[in-house]
Length: 248
Ligand SMILES: NC(=O)c1ccc[n+]([C@@H]2O[C@H](COP(=O)([O-])OP(=O)(O)OC[C@H]3O[C@@H](n4cnc5c(N)ncnc54)[C@H](O)[C@@H]3O)[C@@H](O)[C@H]2O)c1
Image 1 (cartoon, protein in one colour):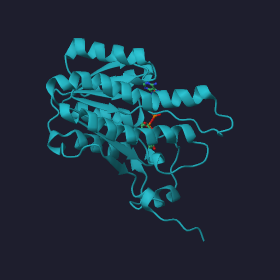
Image 2 (cartoon, protein in one colour; image 1 turned 90 degrees about the horizontal axis):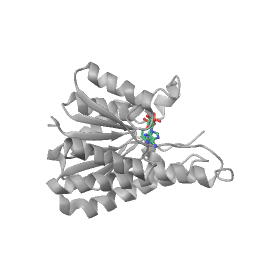
Image 3 (cartoon, helix red, strand yellow; image 1 turned 60 degrees about the vertical axis):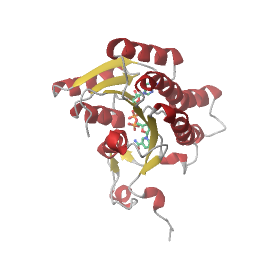
Image 4 (tube, protein in one colour; image 1 turned 30 degrees about the horizontal axis):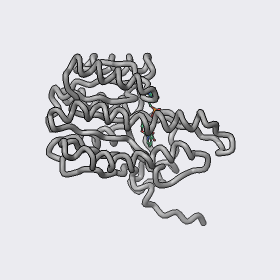
């Protein structure tokens, strides 16, 4: 793998999976752009990267706002003149009865999670196509394929990401741009509190996922020697969606 001096954009890199992805590329010598809505968490990720003498820059961005996305890529083009890798990681959700979910809530989730990926990918592709290469990874979810109640907007956005991924891969292939997505299962980012034995046991792998599980997959998919992997969805869930459950 050679990511030295590659320009890598990670959206939603202020915490959780995105932060770990940003750190992983920075550790490989990439120049990481943290495209994050929250200034405090963006500054923390930036500090963590710089503390190790790696390279990163934070650009405050709301991927739900088309103007912010245009501005993000304009700034990157002015400063770096190219984009090598885009990781569309940002995702928001709300758990709410379909009868109570407002149109504004539905639109916000779809606009951040799905439209944001379309617009970021389009802006990135405008720069990548000039050099006839680039790699995009979208973070979907196993909730594209299975659901708990009251998660319509999130699930719809994630299902959309899987379809958008192969559509983009088809359209951008003539410009040498590879597009894949990852569907994480349960990944511990600290926000679920203390994990129980039962939480680990519902996975074939015997454990809940870690942010590193997803970051390593991003490196794998964007490694140039893996460019035969295209338009696909990589499920990383410790086998949770393959485990048949009969309650006795
Ligand atoms: N953690 C899991 O178990 C899990 C499982 C499946 C899929 N995912 C997906 O992985 C991705 C990361 O998940 P996470 O758990 O690390 O999330 P998280 O909520 O911990 O972090 C998301 C980050 O995105 C930022 N963000 C929110 N709205 C934004 C916007 N409009 N523009 C830019 N940044 C914004 C937040 O400030 C935050 O830093 C998401 O797409 C999520 O849907 C997570």
